[in-house]
Length: 360
Ligand code: AMP
Image 1 (cartoon, rainbow, N blue to C red):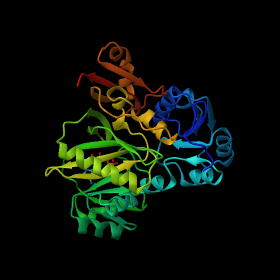
Image 2 (cartoon, protein in one colour):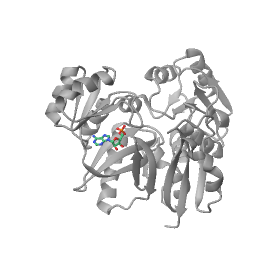
Image 3 (spheres, protein in one colour):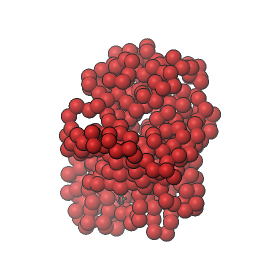
Image 4 (tube, rainbow, N blue to C red):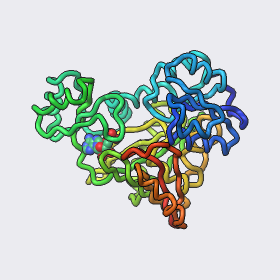
């Protein structure tokens, strides 16, 4: 590692990706005195407009990566589908990238991810990989229908997924998903979806936030309630899971871990994201130090901040034209508005979120 840590204020931090997560990371970094340099494909992006420098280019464009490497010696990312070649290039050229390449590789492949989790004593639904239509049918037969087929790579917000009601249907579903390698998952009969946001510092110290309860619509997060009402046993279980994942990946930064709460109280991990997470947006107005500052602290080698809740929060995503009602929300005394400055309000596009806060 060629970067001297802790990274002092005044240094530059690079972010791969220019979306809203990058924007909120950049704002948090700025508060701590850092300059942010963003590498992003689009010329006009939420993070690009709050960064001191925007490099427009593909993540695998070596000239763009070289420009990033010239501007900073520490790089993080805001989405998990950053090509591993980009991270490899940066690391080879002496740039410190956090979270590391292993976390990224494991999180990019749903089969590798669940295999990693089980190997580290973290429970998931039963699952199987399939590379052909016949293997897909065999996987559903073995796991039992209904089962959920997901592309191993590149799915998000419920995209790249098909429910299979009868095993023979798996062959057509496999083709519909593009004939690419898939994972078939047993259906989780969960009572609630929860998530835990956690962080690990350079020194191995960890911090966890209170759990959030999450509600999705058509595969997209709509609402989080946090801190979620959970038993001490559930909170302890989630913390144990987070500790295993963080240690198993030798992780540095903030991670978002999505959980299924089963009727018997067990928690299964659905997936994790090696980055700040939409279900952690409530921490901006509900916790002592929010997930964005925490991530910057972790990657910069600073001490982690306290994660205690200071308010009860309902986080609502503003999708598409919902963000046009900003004036109404701005007039609500309990509402903290976070808008991403995106240009086109396509249906379902995350344009912003709001945190409605109440005293604990
Ligand atoms: P994912 O893309 O894996 O985050 O899945 C999106 C949503 O689909 C989750 O938030 C769940 O609501 C649902 N889901 C995913 N996997 C399963 C499963 N194995 N069983 C039941 N529901 C699932």
